[in-house]
Every structure is written in C-alpha cells, then in structure tokens.
Image 1 (tube, rainbow over the protein chains, first blue to last red):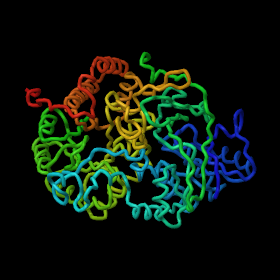
Image 2: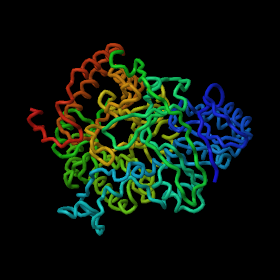
Image 3: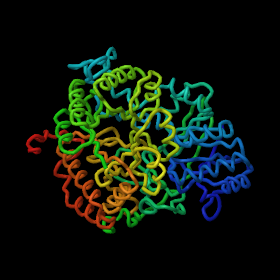
Image 4: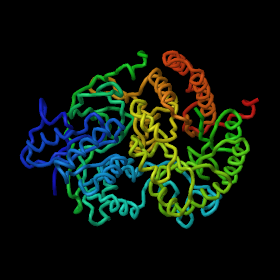
Length: 290
Length: 291
C-alpha cells in the first residue's frame, strides 16, 4: 500500500515546509481552493526534492482557474506524460478526455465520488423527509404511499442520492479512470465491489463542507498567498455532537484510516493544530462595509 | 430578466403566473419539504394554466435517483411533456443519460447541484442535451463571462439565496438530525468558539450581494430563480422582492445607485416574521393578496 501527503504549492518550500524525503509521494494542489492549484514549476520543484513525480490535484475550477490548468496540462503532456491527475471537476475530466485521452493517469477525486453519492457523505442516519405519494407506478394513498411498491418499510428517500454502481462502473471505463478517492467508508465499500479500480482513502479529516468564503482572507478574493497553510482550527459548539474543524476554506470532521484489502493508497492531509483564530473580515463580508 | 419560481400547488401556480412569473417549476408528484404536489393531475392543471398564459413550466428532477426509480420518472416526465411541459431540471448524470437512451427529448436545465463551475463543465452537460444552466451561487461575475456567452443562464437572487457553503458538497445535517439534535438552525448560522475568539462561517454582506445581481444582469444572465420552499408566505415575499429588484435593474440605475437601493431595501425586510423556510406554515390566502 502506498502512502501520500497532500501539499498545496505554497508549502513546498519556505518557512513551515515539511521535509520531503526521496521517494515520497506528494499530492500537489488542493481539492477545495482555486488559489492553491499547481503549476508546472511546482511539479518540477517537487520532483527535484523527492525524485518522484507528484500527483496533481485539482478542485472545482472557475474559467480563469481552468485556463491555468489547461496551460499546466499542455506542459505536462509534453514534458511529463503519464502524470497522475486527481480530477474534482466534471469539466476537467471532460477536457482531459477530449484533448489528452491516454496521456494522463486519471483518478476521480473525493469531490467527484461525493458528487455521485451525496447520501453517503452525510453522517450516518441523516435523511431527508421525502415520502412517495405519486401516481402511476408508485402507490398513491395511505400508509403504502410512504414507500415504493413491494419494498415494505423502505421509504423512497432512502434510495435517493446514490448513483447506481453499474453506471459508475461504466463511467470509470468510458473515461479510463484508474483510481477513485474518498474519505467515506460507505463510498469506499461501494467502489471496493468494482474490480480493477484502485482506491485511495484520505485521513485524518473527512469533508463536511467547502466554500469560497474563506475565513483566512475574509471572503472571496481574486488572488491569495494561502495564509491558511496547514492550520487546523477546532470549532467548539454544544449544538453539534461531533467535533468540527476548519482547515483552509473547508470544514471537516475527524476521520480514521480504513482497513480493507482493496485499500491501495492512504493520503494524509497534514494539519497543524492552531490554538485560536480571530476571524478576518474583508469588505465583502463585513456587514458595516459597502 | 425573466423570473422562474418553484411552486408546490395549483393555487401557487395560479398566483405566481398571474403576478409576473415567467416560469414555474415543481418536483415530481412527491410530498416533501421542497415539493408538495401530491397528485400528478394537479401538476397537469398547472401546466395547462401556464400554457394558457403563454408561460413556461419545468419539472425539477434535481436529485440523484436509484435505478429502480428511473422507469417511474421517465413515464412521469413523458406524461407531463405530453401535456405541454417545457423542460426538465436535472442533476443526475446517470438519469440524463438514461433519458437520452430512451429517446426522451426535452429542454434539459442544469440544477445548481450540478456544480457546473466553468464553460468546459457546461460543454459536458451540453453533450447530454442540457440547454439552460443554473449558475452556482458561489461563481462570481468575473468568472462567468464565458459561461453566460455559451448558453442561456439562470441565477438565484443573491440577496435571498447565497449559501455559505458550496452545494452539493455541504454535508451538514439538518437541525435536530443525527449529530445535530440540539441544533436549532443550520450549522452555517451558529456561533462557534475558536480558542478564545468567536467564530462564524462567513457570508457576504448585502452590498456585495446586490453588486453581484447588478453585475450578472449586465453580463447577460437571462433568468432569476426563486427556490421552492414550504413556507408560502416567505415564498410570496421573496417573489415580490425579486420582482422589485428586477424592476430596479430594468430601470437602468447605475451600479452604485442600484447597490445602495437594493441593500437598504433588503435590510429593512424582516424575513424572521415568516419563520423558517423549512417549517410548514398555514397557507396564505393568495387570492386575497392578489385582489
């Protein structure tokens, strides 16, 4: 089993940079922030430090950020074909398939696996109150209306938000995806039933939410030097039964590495516990500043 | 800009279509907190009313569905299309491909849940037959020029709907749900302590939100969308605010004037008086309001 460390480009060198040993596998980029996307120079810098090509990691990309990825892919296709790319944007997957099919090794990132299985990313037991009362093929009245025909006790909503495994298997084949990634045990077990695909698992954090309203810069900003680093903020409240964390522009719950015969790679997201944090507000999020 | 609004009854269809909505959308005949049509026949009556008034209708299938639900959804959509339905809002790629395979043609509209953040993602969905796109509420005008140029687009009114977190990648439980039994509002609205400091999930201010609306209008976004909700009074209020803001935009105010007017207007609205969007409220007498 392989082990990897997720690093944003700003953390490759300079103060606070982790020591990268020869042969270390680095996931270069960020799954949640468009300001922490890799460039070819970053890739070269990591390769020089570790002697091993890093895996490139993308997030949901706006058009300007996508333009930078197009440049990166064009350079990689020439100078580093076969680079592994973790795709978290359907547009990026589409673009690579159209322009560079076979030139990169593709992994479906955890945002994409969440995209297909939203239900399994919620905390266990969380469901929405959707009950079937439709006409036609489904029951129409009475207690039976709360469940699809022939499935006593199974409410309509319990099946929502789960893309059929057969479709996903075909999707992986069509887009030549070698690897899938997740931080959810449910999602992991679903993909473990699909032969041939490699599976990565992320720890020690599990995604709860992501945003462009970044607490470290006070909102949405056009450019950022990533002052968040690897800082992990512990958010305390009595209203949630679990511990919530903030890291960069995303929120997380704790997560432990999974034990499974299909686990091919563990990806560690480095964190530096931060004792406290005074929320920064820029003019876009401060109520007093037009 | 044209206005599309989510409804849950024939009574609401009648009210909004007669009061300036250009399009209504609704979920399948499923009872939920988002879509309360309980009978297909009532949807058909709403479609017919819209047709009579030369307005549009959309069926919102913006969930991810299990394979065994596809047959019903296809038959449901086909019956409604046979009665004049104009299009279907989609989120589920697998369902969209199934519709294509079964040769069900419609004007497909992407949901905000498609998390379509760039023009390449739009191309992916266009290949599957999507013709109109809902812009994500965390896309900024400076990011969206190519997207708006590529296709017809819809936006939520930022002053009314600008989520702190990005859907569909927000997995917080609803208040009272597992892990959140003591929660009264959504986690993005509560106060936290971080070290010795207060912490809240950030949201933008009204001036920023009004500016977004102005800039997207100038960019050429064609539709304003008002989300479905159970709370009819709040829905009516959001509709009236949207109409007012749209009128201001069409008056041709400059950016500074519009932002000030819109932000100060919204600041005076007391949304709390309507209660939560997620609570079932006694229905407003819509006909009385119309008169």
